[in-house]
Image (tube, rainbow, N blue to C red):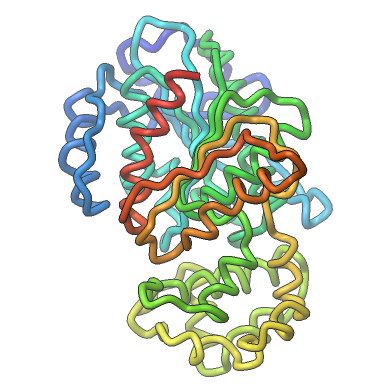
Length: 392
């Protein structure tokens, strides 16, 4: 069924079913959030979840939320065809042209704590309230294996994460075309894992000549090896207890997507392998059973930097970086000085690398959000992203 929609009006029953787009993309209305709900997110829900009070600009308009289903491919598996999902949030106004921001989500514990299930994703809720509630179209890809995807999760699998975000952008544009809505500017942003994905996405967009008006991250590790090595080789007193999940998700994802049978077993100790597999497969488990002491979870040889760097796992991590190209787009990387996941040095890495190229590439600016932790850095950065994007 192909339905052409002009500007969003009152919700109709016909819109509650899946609607096909000529490109083969489909979408379905999953909700409408009014101004009161959006402002509750900004004033009550977000401060409670992120444990920090931040002044946000109040929402001005209601927002319609759609789950977009689209075809994609897995680059690491010879472009195997798959189906992926994501969120499209459209401001409910009389306008027919809006700036667009693509949001890349952070690490989550459940498959459905992602953009296309916004009721379960506090970070997505904040983006919808602050951006879509003020006249931005907001989109967000569920990475492969997340949302309604039936694939194994591809955590830190760079080409697949680039593919998911790139195809979600194309799918969203197809849906917006059918709605007779155009987009005036393109911005991208992401938090934590999503900060890495945002930089990887930017590399893909620049490579194919898609103009990006601004890219912003919060607590984004642009170098996955640096992130993983840091907790093992140079631990800090404030390192988060849940970093154990980073090794579990990446080890199994690398095994699955790079087709290296048994890779996760070479990283995870025998005692915790079965539990780690449950974590990766999003089965039921007790989070307190995962050891916070990495020496119990990860095999001892990985604490030798040379072994780690030369292992199959380490070599993939070393190649998983998103900052070593000449960046053309204005970029703001926000970092927190008390972040328990991303160190200050890692938060400044992209800027320092770009400025270290000859006379210096000044397109990238690393900006402190003060003594904020991991969640606080994102909550503080979002209105700063908005102010900056508004001025671009």
